[in-house]
Length: 139
Image 1 (cartoon, rainbow, N blue to C red):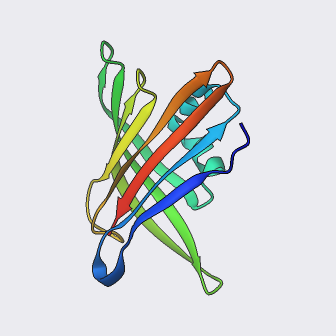
Image 2: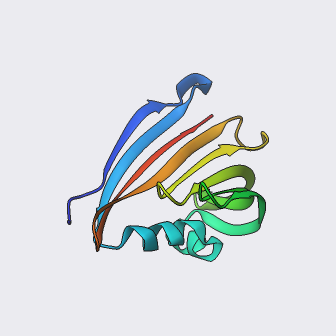
């Protein structure tokens, strides 16, 4: 543990194209606890500094056998451009898979972005060590 995070920009979104990135980070922490934090709206605001608020998180479907839950989630994001905070709302459909410790998401409707999708996956290495993988693309 202690290796620096690896992030690879796959496409820079130039000329209206897709911005895509993937990455990995090795964390000295239990995989289930990390995943629980990703699934907790209050923890989202703490973990992701560009999340200004979680406006709502509605459960649409739960499959107790597959251990999946589908949510509609609205967040207000915040970016700073030339020192000026810019807020934007986005609503995604987010599928939590508790067997894989994975959240996949896609934009529900166009707004500040035309398209956004990706996933976060937590892979247990040992009881107290995990690798977090992510992929995100947006236009």
